[in-house]
Image (cartoon, rainbow, N blue to C red; front, side):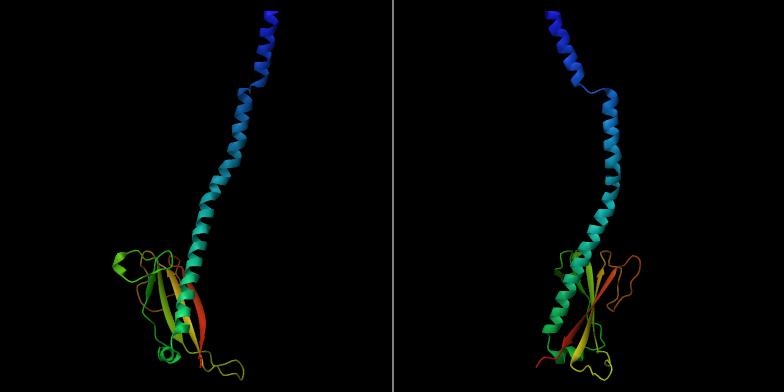
Length: 167
């Protein structure tokens, strides 16, 4: 009777265990599924980083255009054709005044332009275009205070806002 119980216990224990071959196949299947997912991780992080840059750039441009809309129209009209001083912002969209701090990431160039000559017979009086360029420039490569052109290492986002004369 005792031998019968030991044999039954041994069979139950052997039946509930996984063999080395089964464990190896399970690990291979999991590895086959996880390796491509780990390969996609850097691409996802790059896309996430770019979307943050685009979002912060749009926020900065909205702020600058809003400031232009709050400016007196006569003062803004006097600035037509001139490049305004470059402004610098950190990675959260806050303006950085001291360049020596080295914590700025975005350089903003702004230019006030005369409106287009008109569409058909419509004259565009009382309107000004405000062109805002947000340059993601953590290495401070953009240099000049004028509008810049896009280059492979220097992503430039250009936004245009229209400011109208308000009586």
